[in-house]
Figure (cartoon, rainbow, N blue to C red):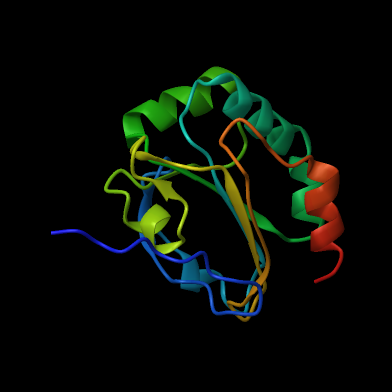
Length: 157
């Protein structure tokens, strides 16, 4: 059975809801942030790779800036929870990571690279009403946005 590729949800559309296991040990449901916090979904290909490590270290370095804007950063990868816990501990990351081990969320956001079986690097900024306000999918997983660009989008909320 062949499945059709999912379309990337555009800015102005309701963010597809999901519940994923987190490194905190408590599952995270996206819709639980509605009316409370904006959310930055940050899909990344694989833990322990150079660009992913650089990107997530940058998020950690700028953690206080995200907090100042009340934005919850939810990094998502296809890695297992034990792998993500080790990755988080090794680098002292401040955010919890979400495991999309079954690749359902990456597929629903249109970022799963089926030939590689992991997600492309992508960002979705979601406001407190659950609407996507900014969406960016990289041309290939080796690219990433600078936090300055992400904060420019956050300032538009």
